[in-house]
View 1: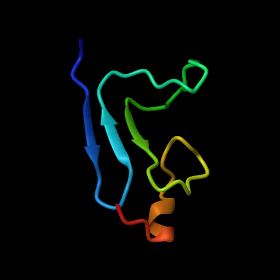
View 2: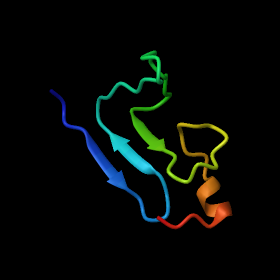
View 3: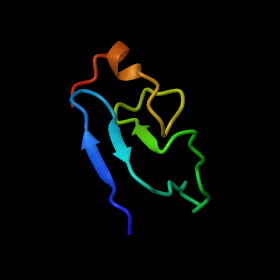
Length: 62
């Protein structure tokens, strides 16, 4: 199994690095353009589940 690293960025997204498969609630794969994923934690992203930088504009603390 390949190594996967998940980093919680201060006041930002979860950064997922390594070979992974992201699935929706029905088990269907969610395609990503890069092997490094930034997943939204603030809930304000227009590209959920991916981060679009909205945390900066909303003042997300986490």
